[in-house]
Image (cartoon, rainbow, N blue to C red; front, side, top):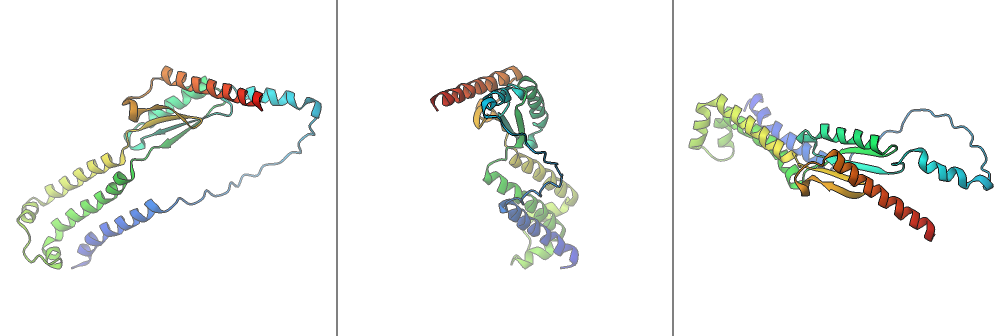
Length: 224
């Protein structure tokens, strides 16, 4: 086999091995920030007035101060625009709230299959381009009839394999999720409801969760 044929056979195997390695390798730690902050000395606290600023600090950041909303969405489904719109709405309705956007990955079997698709694509292209040398290497001296059918329309077969592979990979990489969590509590799930939340609906759901959290915190302070 010449260099071009070796490249067509070896490249899919190399991509498959590197994808599996990157899939199960934990991400590297984030580099430390290089911003230099000047630390000003803190003024001494007066024990007699200690309770007053602590009570006021809970309202400085607004209604959502100290609360976090996580919007986990399908990045490959073009849901980012909807997630950004909901993020801006929540930050406006609940000043001080922290809204975090993140990708909701598909299940592990679908992720593994999505790594196999490029190998299938390059494998079909390699067979079409150099099948007469590949089949004898695996013990098949006479190529099967379907090989000659693909070979007869070489460019059409390559284009079909490439397009079908891209469609399959896009399907396997999509989760269809738009999950909203408020302080770790699931308030809306597109996977369960089968639809997106309305802005007013999501505002009410987050507002009720914040109110319940505030009541629970107040009860905890009273009982403590």
